[in-house]
Amino acid sequence: MSNLGYDRLILQDRARKLYARARFASVSGFLLGALIGAPLGAGGGFLFRFLTGLRFTLHNFMPGLNVEEATQAALQTAETWALAGALACAVVGAYRGAGAGATYQLAAQAALCQAEIEGHLARLGGAAREPPPG
Image (cartoon, rainbow, N blue to C red):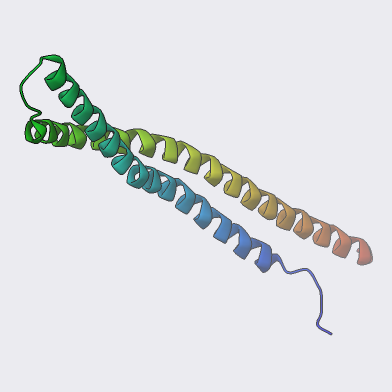
């Protein structure tokens, strides 16, 4: 059976890993939001512009549907909407990542506080066992 004693280094190591996870959560939230937002924005912008282009063509009673012009206009709009969608979702992702990061930092602080309390108790217990000088 192994010795199940207190080891302060385990708590410090775990706190270090939690701080690293907090940094990763903030950055990954931002990047993941941008990666999800770009195609969503592009798809939404393209679809909106393409359908409104066709609607205006039909509304003006033009003899034929000019799908190529509607597609070109939609592609130009999709680029702008992709950027807008990426930025909007990146901000939301950064906000959510920062919240997750704060949770990890709080857990790390609790572990470090526990290690500090254990250190103080060990010093107090050691001082109580020693005979008084003199």
